[in-house]
Image: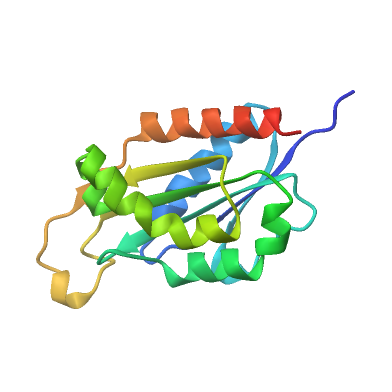
Length: 165
């Protein structure tokens, strides 16, 4: 009998949206048969003992979350030895154009230099003014996450992980 693939989905989130996407990715991979742990980077997950990892964060004001960059830098040796995928949420990606994909995708270049991914997911984010900074309390709530695209991406990543076993 084939051993079940163990996948770590590690994410950094400021207001919870990225965590919800990480949970969806974990749910999809579990439905494919993987054993998945979804963990907030602030809880210091360790990729040791996993067969693959998905690492995610958000781009705020055109900068990738420092916690996401720090996680990959800290664990780069372990991540290089397994298939890894990255995902990013950004308000810019509400318009999924090639220009926006290039702009937001380039924010992952520092991570790619440390551990080359099998795939990258670029998704729209969400904003809840009740969870955001007070200066943005009057801004409208938005949710530009495309759950079907997120699920399809997670399925594709799982298949790529399977191919690397």
